[in-house]
Image (cartoon, rainbow, N blue to C red; front, side):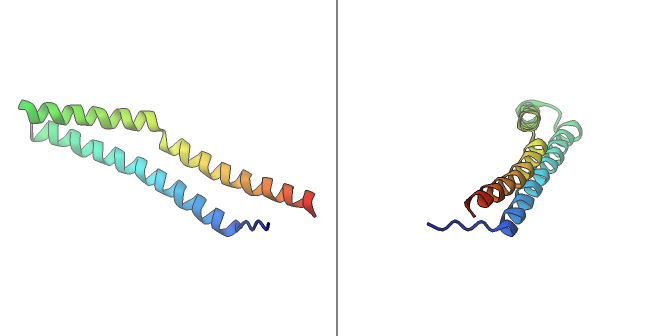
Length: 94
């Protein structure tokens, strides 16, 4: 059996995943601001206002619990470490 590891592909996917997670963090932050602004400036009472408040709180909990930026950092580190481990194992075989 032959194992081929494409270092360039690992680097590209690592960057893509990390960037996507960082963008998701930024998008969630902006979305939360929009929902809060709607609630503060436009819809102040009633069930819609209460729903927006609950939704904004849900976004806040999602952002604080997910730690997307940290996950992006770990992804890059894991991919780099993976390539190093493959290279070390490859030296043992040849």
